[in-house]
Image (cartoon, rainbow, N blue to C red; front, side, top):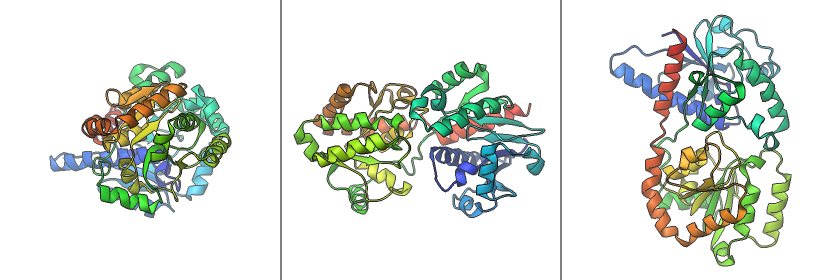
Length: 387
């Protein structure tokens, strides 16, 4: 097999987004695949991640054993500017022939190599009202251009696959699903000691319902705030609504609503500081439930992470979310605030029973998704492009 090159700017970006998490998960899965093949006496493919010369230390910090890197002859800032302006020369002139995988919606030019492109969702086309307008314009233009020079598309759910095929009129065989997953070594139900330590660190007191997502309109947090505030006072006094996530775009209305509700005495809180990845499993494990009423998702990692930790989940019933929580979590219409309130209230009333059930069924559901299996899909796609 030829060398597989994976563009890694999203992996070494200072802001580690969901795309960065996905790239890292796939690379860890590939590391496992290579380890197994070497153990079996097989010759594994050579995999190189393409990064910039000023991000080598960050790449090495991920501790990948069998995956190397190659560097662009520019800094991260310069490369990002060239990529956004589409001013890149063919990059296989630098790195040589091989199979290239571009995991950030938009590719880079190639002269004599085949490639696959990862498209996570079509929110920038189908739900533009929830998107950052500048980013949506960029993706709407550049994804179409990228598809003209791409051999295969990888996406993260069956729902996203169907939308991509319809919107871009692609053959179903050219769009492959490689789902995200959780790492069972990290996402498992944590002890009371770990939970209390994390709560103390972030100044979180008492019981809480967890909302874990970027603060942006697509996540529908304004409806969650409204549903929570409609709960009976006895439940609200006992259980706060904890909002965890970085601020995104178009948040003025949400923040105004939260401030207004807090001033009225509603028990809505945020952590004292940014929640680090290593503390996230404990914060999730300490929640009464995770509520994720998003209007649209390419996949939906927080619900899967919560299930892996044995925490009850309520999500919307749209897009990819039934694939993630179907049969285990409760699902409601994202526009039905009364229905969302009712689902939360029923969970609170039956907290002990619901939690005991989810402690068993949640982790089992999470095992249906595997980074190692998805990494194998990447290898299969790359191998198919060589034929």
